Image (cartoon, rainbow, N blue to C red; front, side):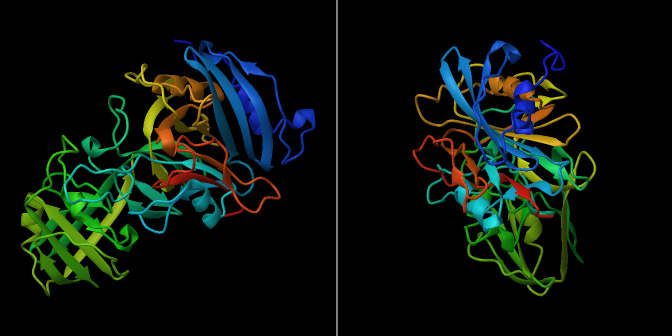
Length: 418
């Protein structure tokens, strides 16, 4: 395997620089003819422009054995003053909307789609929640945790990775790929119950999950469906729900409910052994519920979105798929954590030959990434951009569905937000 340090990422460097050496002013697209022979596949820049100091947008082409694929690249230099990343998200965890709408609502200059999500269901009478598979942290607020890996939507994961893996940014302003765990419990005079979930569409077998106002109005029944080994396994028939308001149990019942959760209220849902533990609580009991997401790395993350790792320490992970080509999106970061690369492929023919996941890892490495994740793809792959002088961001990659697909979340690039 070729060392990632032997090939300089000239494509990314040109895009990140906005081709200023050629005199291209901010907001003006410029065609380029440079090619980068990384991984043996020529990568040709077709345009680039500076959206703001430290933020660039460009397009490129890759010739594969299946034909030409067009890709779009956003770069964000987190060393530049006031350039930052954060989660693009709807008003609730269990909700979806299009990337451009999220970018415009939150004031991002650009963004791409994010994590895979619960967009279809095989359980009779259960509707999709449209919530993501992995964790979410937005503006330092922990919105949700990860479903069991077997309950994930999307292509297979590389060995040793899971739904708990994220792409994020720490309080030091550096981006990284990390892994999150949930530390939480429900404590009462009757003892402590470990938490196994936070605002997620699937709980581990025997687990207890916490739902807050961030979840939204969607039914909580889906959280008790499937198992730790199969997403399609039947919903549990052994469940229990407890409502806590201002630290006091106000309602109990055998079936998970639905509807908005007030900000002063927490809802606990248990299945199997978790249901038995919650059944010990009674109306009037005083309880304390605590939860926090803990990252394997340091410092603490202020932004995180679920993603499947494909590149680590400049090398593609073992076991990546080399056969299935598709429209894909990805997020990567330079070795120093300061430069972020967001990629989305064109979604419609004739520019949609696509990449395998292994090819996507090679692409991200050639751009300069030291670590990268695979994001949701296919009709979800979207790059939205607001150019200087424009009132709103719009989708640029002709998504596969012919229009933007509503998705669970995304990664936004902001200038002057913090």
